[in-house]
Every structure is written in C-alpha cells, then in structure tokens.
Image 1: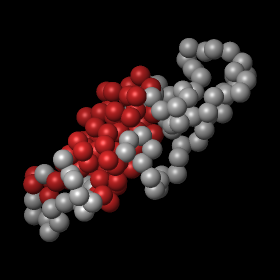
Image 2: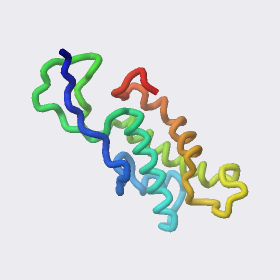
Image 3: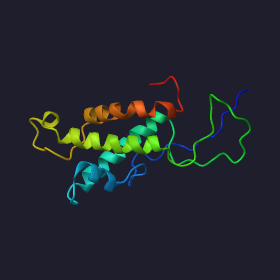
Length: 143
C-alpha cells in the first residue's frame, strides 16, 4: 500500500494579510501614492493568493518533513519558504486584477467604477499568471 506524506493544509480562505507580496509593492507598481485604495488592493492580493494556493494544491511557506523516507520524483519534498515564481505571480496577478476592475469595459453600466472585484475579472487576471506557476503544482494533470 502506498502512503503519502502529510503536507500542510491549504490556508484559511479568508486570510487577513498578504503573504506572497506586499501592499506597498503592488501600490508602487500601480502608481498609487495614497492610502485611499489600500482595502481594494489588499483584497486583490488576497484573491490572487487564494487562487494560487488552490491551483498549486499547496500553500507557502512550508515546513520541511523532519524525516524524509525517500526522494520521489513524482512526489517531491515540500519547498521551504516562498518560491520567487509564486511571489511574482501574486504581484502580477494583483496588479492585473486591480486594473481589470478599474477598466471601463469591466464596469460599464455600473454605479461603482472602482473597488468591486468581479469573478470574471479575477479569472482573467489569474489566467495571465497561470503559466508562471505550472511547474510548482502538486496536483499534476488536474485543471
């Protein structure tokens, strides 16, 4: 019988603080210099980080297995820390999501022109960073 190692569970889907990128980094990239949109940008970061975790099938940072039995190419040991690709994907995805929700074609006919994260925009923003993450997936062949 095959036994599988215990990986850390996925994080709470209602995180309260960014883990993979910072609010300041995304605001600088967007050219935002005041605090009026902090909640919107933070929400975009949290949405992207949750989508990344679900897509990858794991969450970072991870703790190493204290007693790795064998090295299996199909089931590699957990990565300690946060990979640079995950950090970049979170930042780029949050930027894309914030800008997609700001775009007139995404909110035409709406009373709110900024600050509402639409599911279709989140999907399009995540699709733009998905190729960066393919090599880090834990659940190969799914999705």
